[in-house]
Amino acid sequence: MSGFLSGRARRLTASRYVATLATCLAVTGLVVLMAPMIGVGLAGTDRHFEWLGVGAFASDHPLHGILWIRIPRVLASALVGGALAGAGCALQALLRNPLAEPFTLGISSGSSLAAVIAIRLGIEGVFGVAGVGGAALVGAVVTLVLVWRLAVVGSHLPPATLVLAGVTLSMFCSATSVLIQYTSDFSEVSRMLRWMMGGFDSIRLSVVGYAALPILGGLGVLVIYARELNALAAGPEVAASLGVNVGRTQIAVFAVASALVGAAIAVAGPIGFIGLIVPHALRAIIGPDHRLLIPASVLGGAVLLTLCDTLARTITFPGQLPTGALTAALGGPFFVLILVGNKRRAALWGRG
Image (cartoon, rainbow, N blue to C red; front, side, top):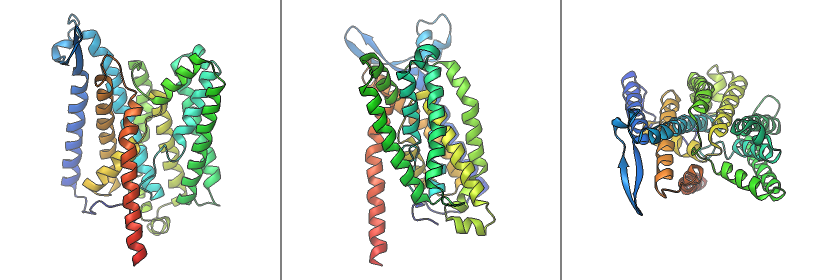
């Protein structure tokens, strides 16, 4: 098994599978139910913690409107967090690299560039936020094709080449986004920056409904491929010897993971590091078996992003922090810790 799979390789029994998923489901349900109730109220200039309570569901309750402003963003953050964490988990197994996630593979940057172009061309003014989200989804697909074409060697997909192609395209897309912003007026730049920071402050329930079906469908596909991902995490040669169609599995998983990222970015803008933090942390806790790790990562991603969004809308109330900026602040140090740990393991191997 690849060195990055550091979780204990305990045998996955039916009882452990059910108990772990039941725990994850219970925690996720509790967080999603409690998050809309939590907020900050103002009494003059004084801020105070505010708990809405179940009474806020009554239509005549004075805080009923506030509750229904929060519910769509809680559902959206859970959906997007699950999509990003599930995609990150699959990509890490596919590439056998603990640092693999949508941002490092260029998919997020490609989606962001497409959204910036849409704003610059005035598509947002014609189709609204849906136009920018649609452009972001197209950008993810185009980036997927470009990264694949740059990385594939014959019928094989070397992980190192794929990461290198992703990083190269990410740098190009980021530089191009800056250039477009430089040629835009102040109002356009403001909208671009607001979108590129990622967040849920203007999310609507209809958007959650449109995104739910493709995201849940994509996550279901990743769960179906869990056994193949277990084999691929040990290397393509081992997977082939176990009867896995390596080429087809690589294409399917990479395409579905990219589509999940594109859909997530279309909903919320770029939200970084959820796909890095959650799978890596859970792998150390519950082990590397993807039959359990993928669904647990989906639920863990939903919990983490919901908590981050709740913190983002309360910590500076009545202002709001961009949720993407908060996850980046958490993910940056985590990324460095993983990198340092890998260097230490490499040093130990080198001494041998």
